[in-house]
Image (cartoon, rainbow, N blue to C red):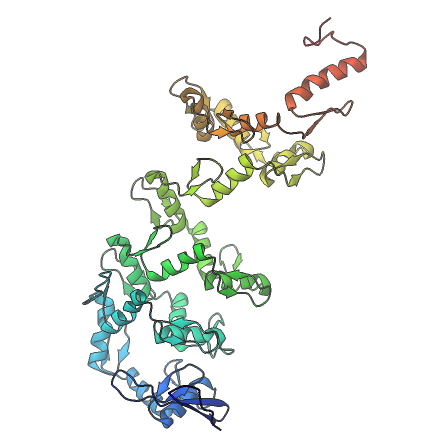
Length: 524
């Protein structure tokens, strides 16, 4: 069966078993050898028909030959016999124990441990251990992506990237981890994964002796010592260590989310985000903490959790020696020293160190939304934390107890105040101008605005500005029609808590027939 394409060049489609074989007579490789036979599964091309037929076994379960020494599988008996020489080979890497069939293959591999990079990119000066890696890298600058997926039309700069991508579409994962049961499409992926369980980290940094499971991770790590960030975002100017980090970052600006959940259609910018999300549907948590029994969906999350029990804090600040259990926490902490506040409020000039702080600021200062309602009195709050604290007034709950006496408190702030005032335990934050004392650093900072005449909180309804968010909040009731404070005697509503307190006192005296007797605010 054949079909002719329209145009000057012809293509012949020959049906072989269940696949279509495409014959492109005009396609040649770099050595000017024609490669007319193309596999319709992975787009790989061959010079001879028998080479294509041999290659096609990769996409079927038939004729798999398993190695008795390791878990690798091969499509042909000759490939298996050739592989068996690796286990008895005299060419073995002294660093990681990996065996090779030839001395040249061993020498090429040793470069990954030495860190020697002889091949330099003429555009960005990045260096590589192999010329083939440089050739693939140069496509980043040229934009060339010659390897295209026939299923989703996604294109790649390297053939290995395409092969890895094809596993997304593959229904079967033939290689299973004997420890945790996780399955993989390729034996090389299983080999890398198995190092999680064995703890093997064969790739070691020659500067700080830190070790890694993959050579790619070691290469990325080197930039920590050099400080080199060659890849710049052309939208916001942010720079990155690797092109892959830049590619992921660029999706923030483009809004691209190529990884879609097959269950709920939710999309993600990274495959790791999709993998984590899928556990919401499966409920699977295969990784268990051997100390407290808590289970996790990812081994990396378990590893971070384990530091709670061990007390390990491997990420240390080089400025103040403060240590952290997570690298992202150290990264955020460094902004304390640099003064960097990359998250700027679009409604005022205030900036923040984290996106979470920015979101809290917007909801507390610039929004009048109060989605959290007290089930006891109906009072509404902007945050769930405020509601929880308020509910304790009704329930009488006092979860914070003093370890030095029998007193209990509704909030942690009240406990800290008690420890300082009654037991002289803790640190007072003292104003260096008026010597007023504060329990929290934030309270001192807000107080200092009064001396400096700084009023960062501006009313969106009028030109007035205030030192604190609480003062602004109190002022905004002037513009609002909302009356959230109610008199418990007569039911009259008020905007301000102070007004309702004055009214309640007068209302109570009025009901008792003693108007103005004990109320200094009422004239006789």
